Length: 436
Image 1 (cartoon, one colour):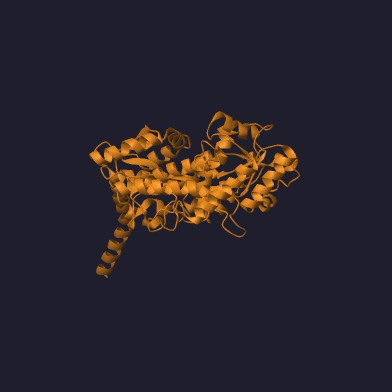
Image 2 (cartoon, one colour; image 1 turned 90 degrees about the vertical axis):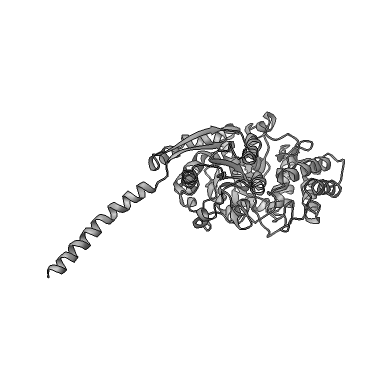
């Protein structure tokens, strides 16, 4: 009997102490120390203003985060130097998808394969392509840019067209349908359809059109495809809009370009851009046209084909030379692996999260007054699940984008055919990169 009582007392003691011991172990296991994080100022401001950094400090009181505001071009200049020198890199850095490929190729980034494996099914599938090389993961995905068609409700109605998102979606179901709609709007209202520069074209629209077809600048086996028949046909399709005279020839991200979105009486009727554009328009680019905009799916190349693409995106990386990798990963995981954190950032900025569980947040079902009460964020999530894999971004993106932008400019201004311009660009890429 005494033996049974002793056994029961021992078991009671174990059950009583186990949670206490686990709590102590967990508390001791939490990383501590200083980490330095490089991010552009706007994103740092969003992290601070949305109180996510406060939340992080509560969970990890022994980690001190040193904020460094740095512009993206400075990251792409300074980080390779620091990696090559073996010193001077931060513990965490933000890098855009379009630039990440060359950093992965360069080496010097922490292998995050083990840390990220539980997130494989929680993050939009194509995003892993941007951060993976030879089966190993070198970054944690943050955001991306589901592409949609934004349109001015009032201009569509003035042209005798429906302003309902579903009906507009039917009008612009294909690029041919979109062009016909643009011609109608020009004829009925004298308003241009969207802004796109000829002589200063930045290649963004063309890349979006390639992406929705699963195309890019190289093939899966690393061969240059810039001059492929499919790529040439895509540029020729874009060229039909130039020839029809429905485009406002304005350089992107300039005051005159902003005015085309913000002026109700002289602005353009539409644009095809990513979810982050909606945030830009609402917050600083076009606040004077609040309530006039709607959104629907982007056009497909042909009836029944994909009406989804990506534009942009970014990730966090941890350089190998970090002296506090555990604390660095704690920061990355808290910011990008928690749906509560991602929802707060998205609410403030429309920086669209790659973390799928975030889409269950109530904010995704709220009506948006800027878009006439439309639940526009549900449209973004619809697009997010249909974005195909493409080969736009990669190790040689910068060179490819530069040469193709020049090719588009030559084609748009009439100095070369689409085929000749892209063939010239392809040969320049081959010569510069050594790719076939």
